[in-house]
Length: 329
Image 1 (spheres, rainbow, N blue to C red):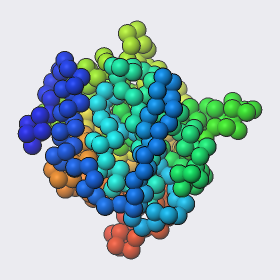
Image 2: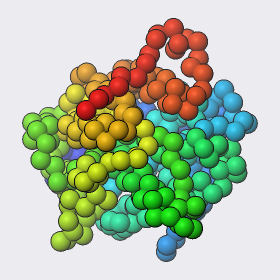
Image 3: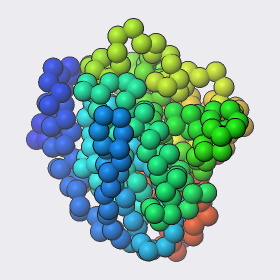
């Protein structure tokens, strides 16, 4: 199926090839628009030197009510990915979590290298938090979420918002309050020396050479890869960060990073709920036509987030007795 989608293997030279491969794969394993929801609405947000799109997904059950919000950042190595490649995932997230999901079409490298994506993420968080009622969300129940490279952005946003609140004064008063962070197969250390990076760098969907090429295009030369804005796992402390829901795959090169991040958060007293999904590869959550378990994983995520934002779990799921698994350092 990967070959049929034109999925690139190993080191690529053309950015268009990288982007086309991910788009083709998404069209094959989870076509955009295939999941019924309560509604979709796009709006433009002005950022430095241009605009980005914010796409709001509303759940089937209550599209007109004020709901908890989830700001979502797609994966793709900061080079590929789009609103379309993660459309199905966002649709399932809004239905299962009961949150209004706001997907951010942040700018990609190499046209916009680091820190452009992070700057766009900060602008999106500030705008959505400031205009929460216009988005139909409760500002006290606004979380951030992301998968893969988008998980990096979500994790770093939590630290930026926390530091702004610590600063005091007008900056603290204007800093958004983040209710939770949902990280799905996140990249948390671009330096990448964990065992899972070495052992799963070939033959498990995401090739190590692809990761290296993504990083070359995203990070300018002479940038410190240990910078917490690139590698949040490398920060010195993790106090006062939002409760975290971290989902990894057994055969994901980033799995060890996700587990280590959960342990670091827990060690600083941050509530953490984590799960490693047996047998799963990177991006599995976006491949329900190829990997049926993806639907079950999103149902588990949905129950966890509903628990966090105090929304009732639909009866058909409550009977499954799904509960988060608390990781303690």
